Image (tube, rainbow, N blue to C red; front, side, top):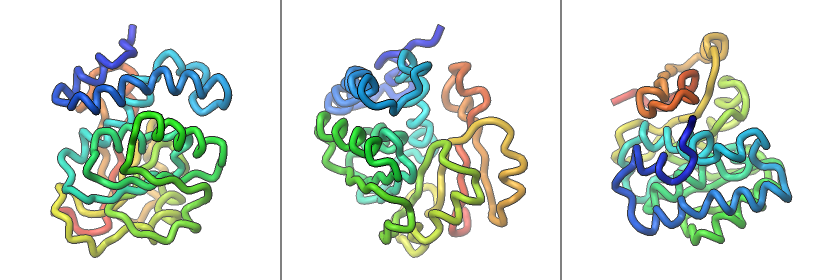
Length: 218
């Protein structure tokens, strides 16, 4: 039986601040309330929000490790705010921009961010072609096949960034299942990290962080 409350977050991230704990703790009620009005989380997953959505999003935090202050991240196709909102809570010194084509979903993400006092997040209703900024990283979760995702976001990655992070600027996304065909279609270096290297829950057995650097790996 999966644990689905704040304990599953503190199990893997025991050093969160009180402000972070309060923000993460509020997500369950907020998403349940909004989901009753607008379907932003699968009905089958409403009882598994913390494991299957919040902790899943934080697999990217486990991957990135510490990020330099001021690091910028674009969450492409954020839906109701995943992975962007959990990551913005985790990295208060970084800046996040969340974009989605579906207006009602971006509204939910915006309202939830406001309710928990996130001040490091901006929102945009649109697609990647309407976002003209560049970021250290683009992140996403189950948005589209990898080659299409790279085409959609390549202009948004700041390959000249001088911030000292563990990983070069690029795309870091959350994916599941057999990715062999997707990766074969990409003409770039692709790094796969099984999420069960970070988290022991059975849900993550077929899930991966997929990273595509836009500079040489250091």
